[in-house]
Image (spheres, rainbow, N blue to C red):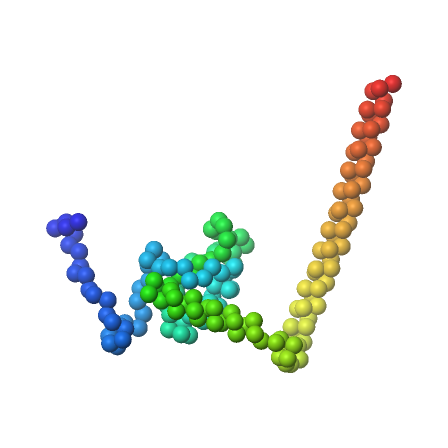
Length: 164
């Protein structure tokens, strides 16, 4: 629409990246972007973005909000990692290659060295927390079973008393 009160800036053609005239970073509008990968969480999305950045592909994600609020702000599944449509094929190929490399590593042959003492303490604390939660859950289940049996017994006694 041509509105004389609000003139539109002239449309500038997109420079050809092969010519070397391309700007280092182009502003990305999520509405114009294609989904290259659906991440399960913010961390995975950031890892994929880093991978793509290493091969020169710009990408964007909209954080789920889970890190701030403790639950995702968007309904449904994962976090889409979006790229420019012209980079979609290369982005998907890069991600597929990285998955292949990751799956082909024999982690039994990888020596990660000794566990630092502070990490060992955190891991031990997590194990204690897990065991405590399991014990509490077991006690809660036993309590619920005892209550259910008591309720059923009371109903049976009550019904038997009515039939006399």
